[in-house]
Length: 262
Image 1 (spheres, one colour):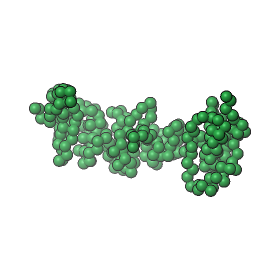
Image 2: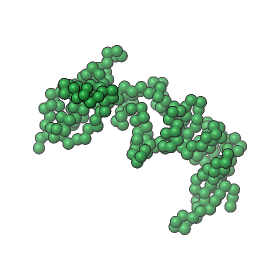
Image 3: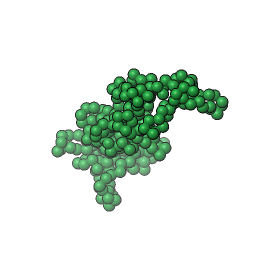
Image 4: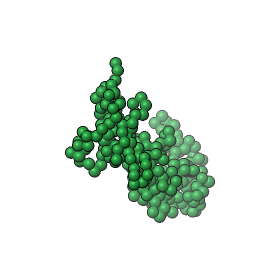
């Protein structure tokens, strides 16, 4: 067999070829191929990176390896750590490569998590699989899955690939709550979607507006609307305080009078 290539057989008897390389006492799989020559080319490309020092994080696309495997090997060579995900370490943060042309920036505090969880993209949403569930990347910042950039949160430096904590400002962190006004004089409007969007009311704090949203959802369900609303979990308020606000808070007469017709 050519260097770095191992022959294997599938359950149906089909022969294929595995390619791998050993670097710094670490055995690294480079993938499976249908022919020996392709597997050998992958091995040679990996040797160019780790032994010959060819290709940097800026020109890894010139290698015949897949972009994610090339990133993994370049990071191992440059930083001494191998991750199964396409991560490249910087001084105080790391980059996660979604494609050759797009990479995200994260704080070093998130390194362990994203070294174990692969980021996937579907329909413009980025998520990981965590305990069998699809978890949106934004959820780690307390941002709801239906949040809209520019309305519910902003990237402070204008770079929507920079997911470092200091670069993300959460504006609306509760379902159905929208901030308006100027700094120091904000008001919070609660809205809920029935057939269209209905305003529940405007309140002095986002917590009170979030409770108003919960109350409106409860009233609608009690009046026969069969819709599962996302409920808000209110931080820094105990059960007694929550109950007191919930009972006193006013919601729109439309919500209170809404009934489902047979």
